[in-house]
Length: 114
Image (tube, rainbow, N blue to C red; front, side, top):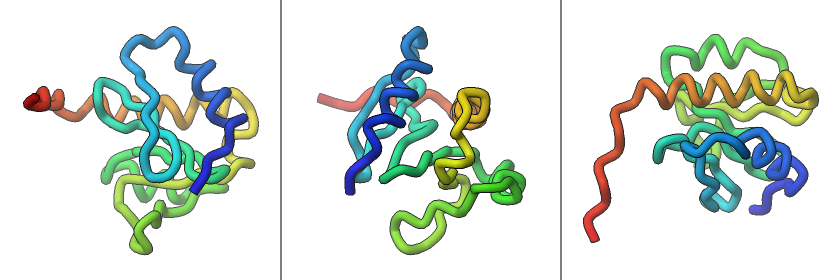
């Protein structure tokens, strides 16, 4: 699976000044990790957002949003946003902020053993 390079450039530009965000290729797409937790990503031309279980149903009620079913089964807490749902920079930032807000609630990841 590939990902849309134009969307990746938009995300990279948005995250340019945020030292807590790292780009990482995964899921056949690209993910943006905030303090080692995936907050948003791109699969094909869709934005993948980690909204968490508490915000999941509310997010699904929004236009252009559907369950993330990467494995064939919906993953609760993760959504896809169709391109029309983040066409404007304002909407893109809104989804990024939702992803970051959720991962900020997670405990820090333990360092990996070498």
